[in-house]
Length: 354
Figure 1 (cartoon, rainbow, N blue to C red):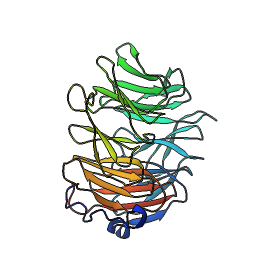
Figure 2 (figure 1 turned 45 degrees about the horizontal axis):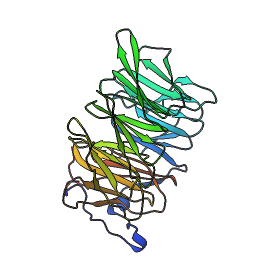
Figure 3 (figure 1 turned 90 degrees about the vertical axis):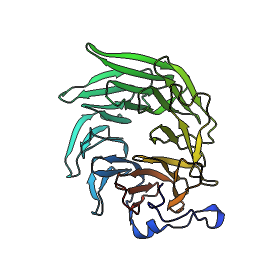
């Protein structure tokens, strides 16, 4: 991160932990009463979801807005096409659109079947339940449904929403929008595939595996890319910088794979940053417009570091003993950190970051 954003260098205390940061002492600390399950930048807000079905909308220095959305845990969330609304799925089987004013629109209900994934892209909304992905256009009351060979692991639109990628056991299916409907393209790789994402330029698709690895495809010719060697499962990734890099969790630092050029990471080693000692990184996030990574760890610490040859690591949050499970940053430098314990930190980085 630029040196004027954060005024602290990493400092460790006994047993390799990081001590409390200035941002912790000066920011808003609250107890949500339930585990944080995710966080996203949504319009003008950073929104956090929790295991008791609540959402909290955070904005600048205003008190957070709490909305009781689901009757159980919120399993997934997404921004809703550039608005201040958020899309959520829960273990109560409901797919919802929720506004910071507290308006809750039920898009679909699947009864006892969980809504496992949600996504949105330029006039389209999607969710999955079981082995079926459901897709709504802007004016659609009833969805298009796409069946898959096993439970859906994740959903992702490309930048123009002309393709919807769906992960499942055995690989991924890319549904491409044509004049006469949606056509499926199969990407095959043995194993269970979960969260997934298109690269910003749309040339690559990457999935997190059930094993300790990522898998990717170059979409023009379906060339496989296996990114392995992680000591733990990759549960979080984020695109950072202009080249860009794919920053990932699953190790004791953020692992950042280069995706510039026509071959992406093929035959190349990743960069690493935000070293957490013996702790495993559980969540990563990027800062808009800056080639740097925010990394949350299993002991509750959050570190930030640029992808440079010089060490620039800084402590956003010290170790607390509870894993970071949610992490998001706004363009104005507000940071949301949520833990499995239900603790939440909301703080702003120093300096003008607009």
